[in-house]
Length: 397
Image (tube, rainbow, N blue to C red; front, side, top):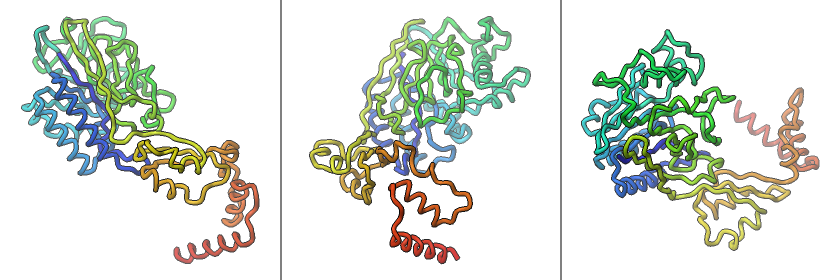
């Protein structure tokens, strides 16, 4: 039985104030092309469908279009909520959608009923665990000791599998909708959205300070394949079948080295799972370039390159270039970030050296200018700055 594993679509996301919707529509079409080629039996979407708990109208329209196309493919579709999603909103209409083989994880209330699929090797049970925090699980199982994310997720999974922390069978099997207990002889899949210890992270993820939201990979030992979401880089955690598929697009410059892809997992007889990836090529890549202004702005530098890519440009000039962003955007229209790497910035930046206590705005400006330029403001510059300050204060009054 073949599954396509997706996660962290973050539909509606803005990166450095650039809307990613056009690029998201493009990559979702590419994913649909892969699905048409692969003809999977199931599609697993492991959370963070949207970037916000209250997504914009256009983001909702994009997911509606994508979900409709997935349903039309004939595959069973499984969707859980991530930490960016509202579980209540995402689960809207779920009973109606089950008629089209679209299964939306309900709000977590302690019982996770699997969906049963069948092929020539027997049954495959798909369990959907939305993103959970300790408090959510504690409300469902007040008799359990739940202090951490590890405790919460372990408790939630043990109530699916009937397996205690020490590996022994528990007596609180809640089983499936049909009332049957967890079948270890069958093939079992878990779709989850958590931070599993050992995962490589990047800046675009929302993680707790000190790794307090980490959970151990051993929690998932009873599952034949674990489709994870939350971490943006594609990777396995321990064994080959506990995997983050990663985001379909790069969402920060900490992801520039990522090779984005779609994960394909094929389950044959019990214990035999094959995993491979299908690479994704975006409409516009996210890249970093550096050099002196004259070099970066030179035709020889950019000719033949994808100037429409989303860029972080680092200039190495010792002096700031007047309106560098405006000038460079005439060549590279999608510059997301511009900064300098020179002696001044390497010494720690100007703002860190400016102390505010007891100083007038003009004194603060003079001190900032001194640190930035290694010379004092001229009398003409002081007069100009003073005039501008007066105009601003008059407008406020």
